Image 1 (tube, rainbow, N blue to C red):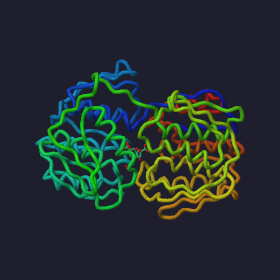
Image 2 (image 1 turned 45 degrees about the vertical axis):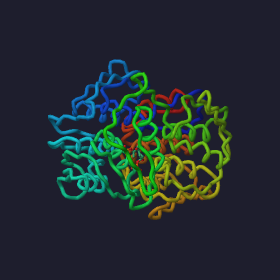
Image 3 (image 1 turned 135 degrees about the vertical axis):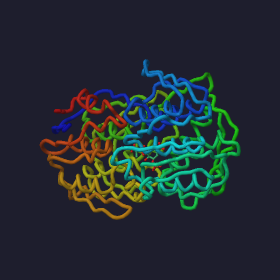
Length: 428
Ligand SMILES: O=C(O)C1=C[C@@H](OP(=O)(O)O)[C@@H](O)[C@H](O)C1
Ligand SMILES: C=C(OP(=O)(O)O)C(=O)O
């Protein structure tokens, strides 16, 4: 589906969707438990992939009330799936449930769409091997399809930290139900580390202890997942909030308000500080979870995305509409996402009239030399590229058509409905 955005202003109130990262973890943790109710979950293409995996391992997921998903767990003992697990577009699902597969004797086959089958899984497969499990890429290229089995009892692994933090999350979540637990030694610096903080927070809420060590992380074995009161409540998603705030800062002369923005471990909360540093008028009432923002003159800044890779597309759009230079650094791992997002934003913003320079681990946007104009841009079948280009479309001169816009379903299914309800000119 192509979506065309006209130059527009926005106003009003926008509720942030629930967090994708917390929902994945809460659902899988409920699977590792006897069961739990996941309240206010994100129901999206990616989280449905995790629901499929929990079911494949012998749990069951009742979605009849989408505000409170009832999960019957497999209680730390996953069954052998009776078919292939399709993780679709979701890296989080594939990484997290690879470690689940390693807990049982027999084999699990994991696959995904073209994008997911091109993303790196090698370090996690190697870690399962170090724990004496079986984990292979069918094509022997470190990419899915994967064949994974065990049974892993725990032990020690050494693993790089600069490819994906999801490997660490996977090992911690599965490690808690092994006999011996898992000690993780990081052989390179951890990128995306707030995502491991989210994991530690969810584990604690499910009554599971895991912690940082001097060189990595450790989780004791023999633990049970058991959330207080049998339920878990998912907070709003700050990666999704980044598009809403960017919209407001670029195109809301009368201001707009984002709700469900409560503090949590999400690194992408940094978008509030980034916009503030760029000169946006915004304020965050943490108690009520409301952020108000209004159209402001923005200036370029330097910002490292080592901890916040998912913000790169949003910051690139903001930079293209700001004065001066926006330098996004420490971005190499942003190339391993649904698409290479460093290249994707460079290419597509360039089509819209921005001057952008791409380096291996940096994206530099010369807002001072950019005059955004509407054209047809390729959403690259990547939800974050699509949403960031749509936001750029609000302030481009003329109409911007974004191809493949249905992929917002991965993390923010009602994105375009919401954009329209805020007053933007959206044509499907
Ligand atoms: O664990 C998670 O929920 C995520 C971790 C991050 O990936 P990496 O750790 O691979 O950078 C992030 O980009 C992704 O959107 C969600
Ligand atoms: C990279 C992302 O997710 P995943 O790794 O789960 O595909 C994302 O949502 O931007």
